[in-house]
Length: 179
Image 1 (cartoon, rainbow, N blue to C red):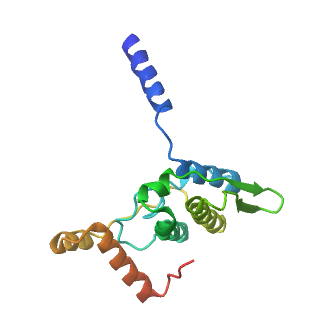
Image 2: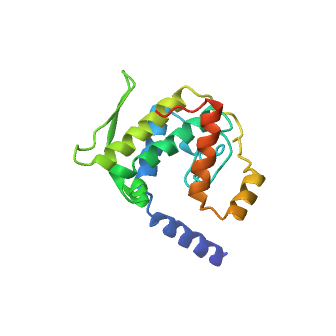
Image 3: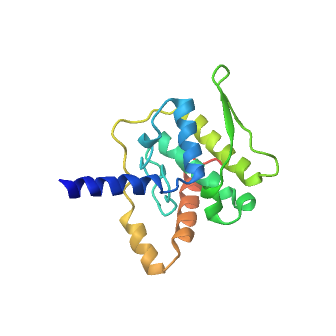
């Protein structure tokens, strides 16, 4: 009994000191405040909702997942403003939401171009999700087995395969339009 309580206490204390990446925290708060939806309902939804989804080669499972894919592309496009990939997740930004007008505004200072770019991506995602229906029971992505085998044979870096296959899918399907 005492050892269980001790383990539980250590677990609670450890979680208090784990840093939350600012951009995830900002996006989660924006989803909660604007959409009035628990942001964790989107985490792991489909192929592209959640962090570290850049290796997926399948098309989005639905409109919600497509919003997340566009958000991933938007974050990729911030490379010029943010530099190293880690800064995209470690950069804090500020924003406001007017309940009456339903307007979200990025308020980070002008010299913080990375923060403004990330905020703009998150605002686009929230606006996109506002008009999409979240399906009960998270839709899951099934990674194309052929694509995984092909990657190993060709020995391509994951990022190169992802960009190449996604570009081909969207350009040939006519579904993708950059925001």
